[in-house]
Image 1 (cartoon, one colour):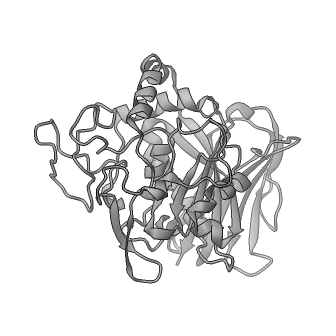
Image 2 (cartoon, one colour; image 1 turned 90 degrees about the horizontal axis):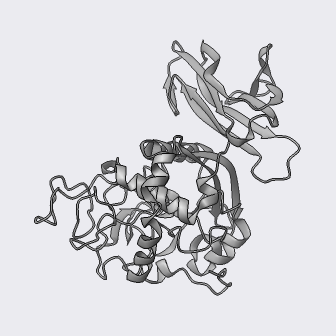
Length: 415
């Protein structure tokens, strides 16, 4: 499919109730100004019958074969684009971004997908942040390698929209139109209660990887094209335990599934066959992503992805591990450090190979990438009261690719 031109308008936002032709797509949440907003839970357009049939045929010969031959998780680099107003309004913090990454990794771990933060880009452009008519212009200017990278855009979406994305089959795999757009206040710690725990992004990434809503086609075949999600007549809201909107079909409504419209606190699962469908969709329509084997640095404090809250008597156990992916043997800078809430010269402290922790910013090592497993413990002591953000950064050398830096971070608050 050819790239859309500048006049392209987001079809999801033009027809926000396309899933059912009714108002079931409405969601009520807390706005950033402290008032309740009636908006749209998901702006992703439903597939047409022809699109669904074409996708079904494309998956038939490949589906289970790909699932059976994949032994490791698909690791997807993520480029965050924080699209703010011209005065900086609608920003999100680095902590929120890290927590959003944790939410995604927790949600997708059991179905074999993990996400590695590659970059964060903050842009001040009010029109891009609020206007669907500027989507194509924004993505064309900001998208990072869409064939191999998940681009997530946080915006101050107008009309109360919480998020939207497109299916893998919607555009060519290298189209800048791919990616996920979410309301900035839907990230963890945001104000969009009860959609403030990061599962708007989880839901939209599901579409990005090829999943339909659990209530697609209602109680009628083929439903959402996944056999182990019960049929559902319409979307759920809140957390309606025991709801059974298709009583003639087995199973209660899948209200806990990430592809329903329940509150974030109610969502906690994908099914095995949803994982298989994602595998098929990615293998067929996103082969570059399917064959991605990127660097995956992982940092934990007390076996947690954070944030971690400790007393000054508790020991902070910091460890790092690394999956080098297809970059094994490539020369790189390794950097392990912490940014503290203390004034200079104690604001930055870094870990140096063989010398331990030192004031200031220093390389841990410059060495070819290798698998760091089991994890390397770099700290195991109590910390004085304060706020600490630990970083583990890998920066590949002598490379002209934009995919050359990977990092993970964890925040610790000590009282």
